[in-house]
Length: 154
Image (cartoon, rainbow, N blue to C red; front, side):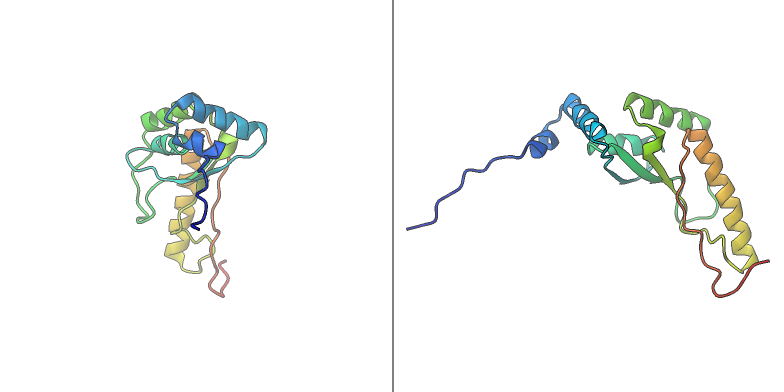
């Protein structure tokens, strides 16, 4: 006798994820907030820094992390004030609190480097990234301080 086939039932969370209705996503985010669970992801900023908000919203997240610029270069264009305003507008529109947005520092930085050029570039980038946080209305910042590579910088 062949095994019985089980009826497939969807979990409530799967139903919400499948729904294209923004009200359902918003309700789900509010539910997580009520439970003090802020779940999100590290999202990209390709196409504009405000795209991070859109990406997190599309996946139903309640919080997110983002890089503030390219991870491939020390030199980055200044943050356009219009882009910063659009980011803040999207955060407000989607009800994201800055306490649940975590900017992540560049992996290029090494604020402990004994190499003068790397140390100076790292300091400049740190100041630039903190300035970007300010322009975006963000009060958190996460970075890896780096390594002294077994030596001390004076």
